Image (cartoon, rainbow, N blue to C red; front, side, top):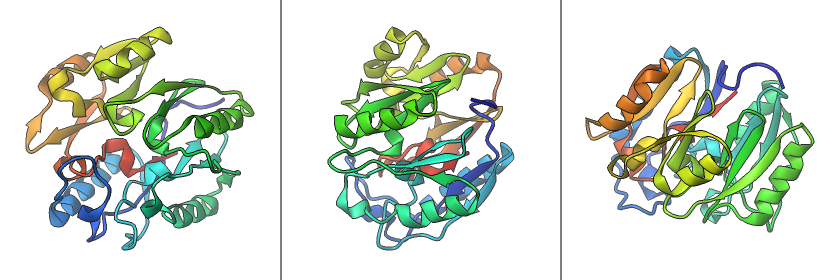
Length: 265
């Protein structure tokens, strides 16, 4: 392993298509496309402010969830390795093609990905140092998790699964902030503590704030409908990062969080 986990200089992003509101969601949905565009642009600006160069892919009209590029692959950035995921949902099949092609042109090595009957979304994968945690969720099954662990073992990483029940992905309910510190909702906090990590437990009424995103020395934090998650911000303020708040109301309607919108490396 080399380099710092949060030393990112590149990212793949993809704007929401005009059919964005027709994507999969467990919530009420009805996202406003124009507002989603504005929020996505602000998100991209925050990544640039954090020191990241963006590769912007065209929107995919046939795949309304395609702006959530995190789900299609997991990048081992220190090794320049890309592990393609295997998204369970049929409506999302094909999203990965242009993403993997672009990553290949940027000097990353695409290895064999997760195969049926295994399923795995990139949003269920979280790295902490030399260990990966994989959410066993409605989108990621045990066969996919075992295949993924077998692959990362080859590069010196360990892997463990965490059961995810009340949120869509592991990344929806937890985020790694550095210095062995995880922010997580109550459901997931105990698992991380059992694995030896320090915990910032997200208050029940601020659950969406668990989807924080550390990029270099910045910490991207969500805001909903103009409202900051004040208790969460208070809890992370002592970590010393530059906090950049981003309005995420339209992506929250589609089950999306901050990390969903980019593949960082």
